[in-house]
Length: 357
Image (cartoon, rainbow, N blue to C red; front, top):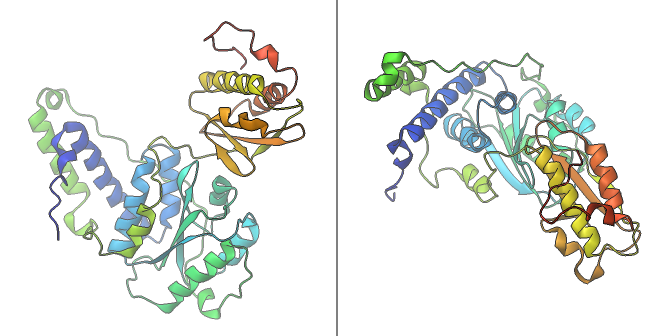
C-alpha cells in the first residue's frame, strides 16, 4: 500500500486536532445508537438539524460504520427515471422487517442527503429523485455481520422502487425486528468547558483532551478504517460532488415564474439579478436556484443569450436554506421582473442594493 505522507497533517494544528477529536467522539456516540438498533440516517439527520455535526462528516461516518465496521452491502446507481411517489415507497419498504436500509442521495443543490427509507419525513427533504442523479443504498442488519442474499435483494428492490417500478415483496423480507418507530430527538452532548487553569496551559489541556477521548471512545469501539480500495462502497460516492460544509438541508418546491414580456431581455435579466441580490442580502443563509427547461442556471445572463426565453415561457425558481422566508414576495417581484414593468428595479443608484424584503 502506498504511504499516505500527509494523512495526519490536520492533526498538526489545535483546530485540526480538536475537529478530529470531536469527530471521533461523535462516531462513538453513533455506534452506541446504532448498536441499540437505531437507523443511522435518523441519528445523522438529527445531528445535522441541530448543527452538532457538519455535512462533510456524513459520508465518512456512513463508510466507517456501515461498510467498514459492520459490513453492510451497498450499491450505487445513477437513476434511470425521476420519482416522487414517496408515500407508496415508504409504505412498501416499511414492511421489510428483515433488513435495515439507508439511502445516500447526492442532491445537485443540497449535497448529500441521508435517508431512512422507512421514515417518511426524510423524503420531505429530497422532495423528488431526479433522473441521472446518484444514489447509494446500504443494507444490513445492525450488528449482524453475516452476509445474506436478502440484503442484496432488498437493495435491488429499493432501487427499482426509486425508479418507479412495481415490486413484489418476498416473504423473507417481512420477517424480522427492524421496524421504524419515531423517537424523540437525541440531544447532542454538551461540549465540556475548559477550566481557567487549562486555558492557561495549552499543553496540559491537550493532554487532558486526549484522556477524555480515550475514556469516551475506547479503541475497541472505534471503526477500523480500511485501506484504499478495500471497499467498493466508498469509491462510488467519492466520485460524486462533495457536499459543502454549509450545504442547506431544506429546499422549497420549484415555482414557475411566467415570462410576460415580449422577450426575456437584458433589462429583465438585470432586474432579476437585483431582486435576488436584495433577497440573499436580507437572508444571507438562503440561496435562490434558477432552472430553465430542467437545467440549473448558474449565470442568469445566459437566459438572455440569443433571446431563447420568449413570451409565454416559464422560468423555475426554488429557495434553499434553514429558515426559509418571504418566498411569496420573492415570486411576486420576480414575476414583475419578467414582465414589461421590469424598469422599476433598475432606477436605483449603480451598485446599490434594493431594500425589497
